[in-house]
Image (cartoon, rainbow, N blue to C red; front, side, top):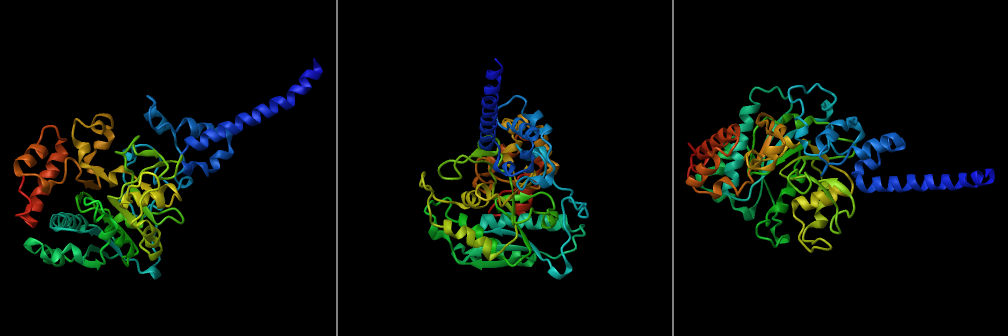
Length: 405
């Protein structure tokens, strides 16, 4: 009997080692890869805590798990603030406390920092919308004490023919102090007509600024975002973007044959980007121009390129809270996010709102606009914002957009 026990000891040790190996292998497939490199994995206790605290998809205890998963901010390169799934669990950064060194840095005077808000503009309606955002941002910034120069930049190409836009929109842009920067066209790399101009956004990577906040023109800035210019980014990271929370499992995806197969990572959206422009950054996206994905053979558009090059492969992007990139559809009472995530509906915290619900505001007639944006099906705060946006846009370009009264 004693001899049997002695023989069993090595066997049990082997079984235990195999068990730990299998467990850690499972975790490697389940955890997002930014956690795999964490020092937490050195502790088996922390490993199991991370594993069981990360079910962001199907558990009825999902909210509890997210709240219970607390990790110091500096232990993850991906999320700007604690929390994983839908980032409305995170409030925006303390914009009025730029001395808060947990989130913000102070540039060296020798750096001569210079910042910019930027939009890629392809035609008149988008220029009109960008003008509304620029005017709104200038009004929001009027009482701020941001100590560094900030420009407003329109990026375009000669093919866009923006000089022919009605209502002297280009002249309005320049009168408001906006800057124009023209680049060669990249349209020839895309065959899909809807996304024909999607690569032009990458020209913003070449602007000569310390940092740039790039916003899609088919949206509106609702709050002053100057604080993002001073946001601390992890070492080696030159870009930040909001979570694409409306995709798949609340903004998470497991990579397929086209993109990082088998890796769990948070999807990001390019509707807003915080960028430290450089030729090196631009050189990383150029190889994707005109290429198709290995399996699906679909073309790489702007968001696909950012996912592939900066997100799942190298984790070179910081994920901002959802409030920095929110869809207007969130505020329709029939939508899941309205019903399930009340915290997401604090309209005062939305920094940038993207027009996505059933097209763009300028694609609808006045009766449809009134029916959609004046609807009792819409959150009241959102409804008043849309009314104000149409009023502002009508003043900028009266024949392009109706006035919603």
